[in-house]
Image (tube, rainbow, N blue to C red; front, side):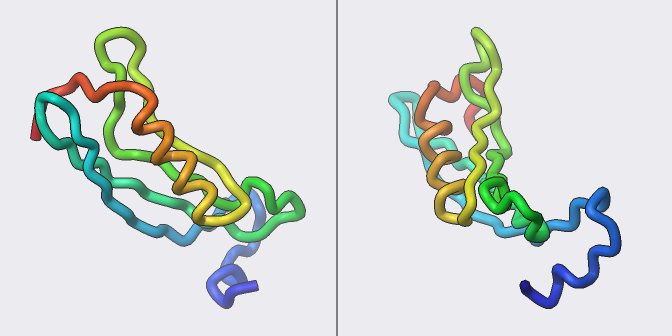
Length: 96
C-alpha cells in the first residue's frame, strides 16, 4: 500500500492518484492529440478495477459520440485498453 492511500478515511471518497499521458492519432485529415488521464484508485478487495483511463476527446461524433476509456488491474492494462478504444472510431470533431 502506497503512503498516499492512507489519506482515504472512507471508501466512498474514492481517492485516486492521477497519471497523465498524451498520444497522437494520425488520420487523413491531420493529427489529433489525445490526452489520457489514468486514475489509480486506493486498493480495495477487487484489484481488477484499480486503474481507469479516460481520453479527453470523443470519437465517432457524427453517429454516436464515444469517449475512449479502459479499466485494468495495472496502469499499463488500463492505458492500453484506452489506446485501443481511441483507434476504434475516427475523430470527427474540429481539428485543433
